[in-house]
Length: 248
Ligand code: SAM
Image (cartoon, rainbow, N blue to C red; front, side, top):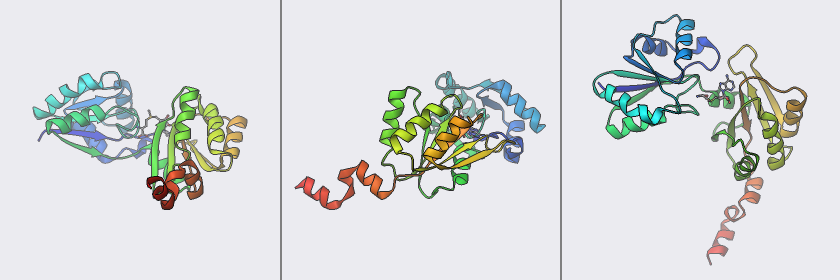
């Protein structure tokens, strides 16, 4: 059957690779990889031989490449899609091929596994029953502030991806927008030897970033707004009576 398979790869600890990922690396006819060198490096560490043809499939060519990959799947090939780390499509290439598979009626499935979003959320100690994933906040200061202000009244736990270069600027803005007391967690180097989770209020984590700048890969998890903070951020949604009054 015509099949596209997305597969998650380790986000730091090679042992997190699933037996299913390893079998797919060996058996897929085509492996579409974000970075072909990193793919071979992973395969070497896992001790598996990549059996199929390897093609580069990254942010800059995914739209052009997607149809060709679906053509191959339609012709009977198993097409494996992997990114450098974690789950394809989550701030990584993959969405274009999923969309084209759906549009063209080709089966698409997933061999799930590590992703920094859920790892950080679960370790944060913050509510996990409702959360939203915001990826990377914008690089430019004005846009970043605007994005964060839009999240001020968000009641769900918020997950952000970050880099060591920008963490200090992002913490300045988090404290400015959300104030010093909101709970948060800074999760770094997840699954690796130097994994570290800093938990506390924004003020404390911010000061820690200044005193001891975190290196490596970072996920920030921010507590959602309290009902009162949400009501202040979205005044008209707070009280049904207010809405009735507005509608009258
Ligand atoms: N597809 C990946 C996933 O499923 O998590 C995300 C890829 S995105 C380009 C890279 C970002 O993910 C990093 O900047 C960091 O925010 C986060 N990340 C990936 N691996 C991580 C790790 N081991 N520890 C902490 N954050 C990580």
